[in-house]
Image (cartoon, rainbow, N blue to C red; front, side, top):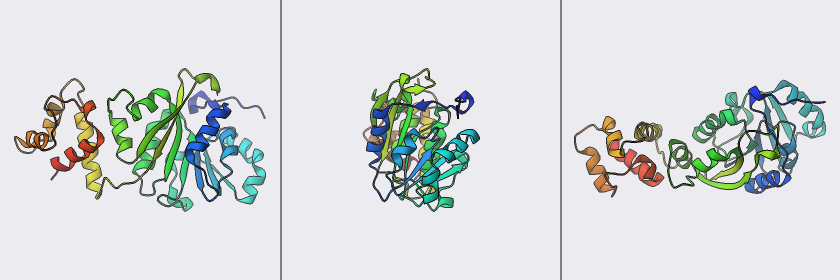
Length: 265
């Protein structure tokens, strides 16, 4: 069966054996693991993941679903692979008996839903143990703040886990070739330990979104909109030893958690 990638679905099939191996290495796959794969495509990564106890692969494209069903007929029959024809953004881990910390996500994801996937799985109650994703190189660099400048994206990921840049994957290793290079990123130690209550989580994201609203302003100015009593923010900055001229991008995750906690107490 000849299949032509659909641009509308963000399909770029990985054809680099070293990159596929690196993704599996970063996933630290064990024979008792359950792996969730998003967008298996033609099954290049799927084949490598089958050393786990079980792989659940979610494929939205009907044609690819049929191709995969034929390619992995034996693995599906044995229960090693569960192939699902659906949209990952409608996927609920609990429907597949995936509990908090009881599965890993390893996938070459469609770039147009990268942010939505991070938000869905990092903030859900049934978080994965780890995530190994192939994303745009620029996005991977922003997440780990390679230039030492934080962003809403980097802080949103670091609030839930530890992000590590694993490997650059040149655009020539995809079919069709995208316009930009990619990179493998691993997120480990995933938890909600930083948020004891649901309100803590909301307050944190309200704080960082407000703080990055106007990038040219210093953090102190951006936070004024959240200030309840005159002098509150100055007191918080003094308490946390934050320079009043600091910008949002210069503040690390540990300080952000403290700023949020102090602002809403």
